[in-house]
Length: 348
Image (cartoon, rainbow, N blue to C red; front, side):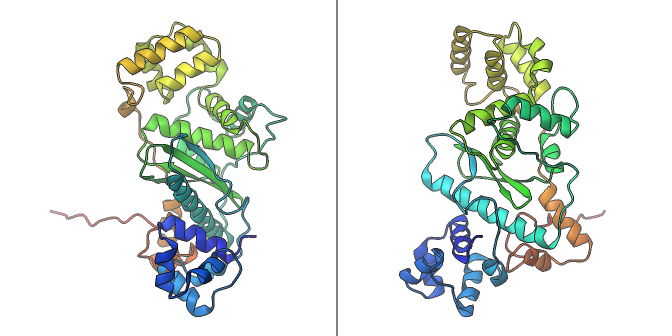
């Protein structure tokens, strides 16, 4: 069970507010705020109201006893580069924690019925590729490329939230919130990289919800490769690979040229020497960081969270009432479940 201090800490970090800024807004000492955030003291009602105003959250949300899988701000699965600034990943981890608390808060009041579900496996008993094949079969995915990956993932009750992370060194992160997982996805990524990130994070949710492993990142990579590019289907296409052929395969499978070549390498279709030549050719053309063909892939959009808000609005709830259901103190504050604002159209 997570205490009020965990909620305050996650909300403050997600908002990018320093301890000094928050304590000044509350009119309390540094020591008092530290005690609140470390669950050593419970704020009184007046301080709770001020906290809600400063953080954009309701007092009821701040006081709620969350029962989440994993401790707050401690165990999010994250796809990031080693050079990512600690301040960036801590901020996004806090953002993930806040979203998963808000989704848990909402679904305790309005349970969601998903068409599919995310199964979990022990990676010591089931190979990542086998787990990926199980999920594909369970969700009844068509043989071959996965069209509109986000829609399939959302069909299993996974909340995919796209946001600009403010850096391209982080692709995405994920964690369970009660029954339903949350994936935060960097909105600034090209479609092929988004799709690989989504499959990678799905791999974490399937394999690492209850089991920690030193090879978690590699296992998630193996899961993603099989989920997006099943060996028995794609293998015949990976012989005699050229850069031109990779661009064509990218259009067909919706993954990057690099992901396709790595798949060919792991399946023994190309040698280590071929791999070295490939990356030299990619670097020489400037394609290592900006591949051709990415803008030709059909964009995918996360819709589940906003559709929940729109359904609530269609059933007569105001924006303030929807905000209250997710723990916000006002409908004016942005949140993942906010209905999309639709402008008026002029009619001539």
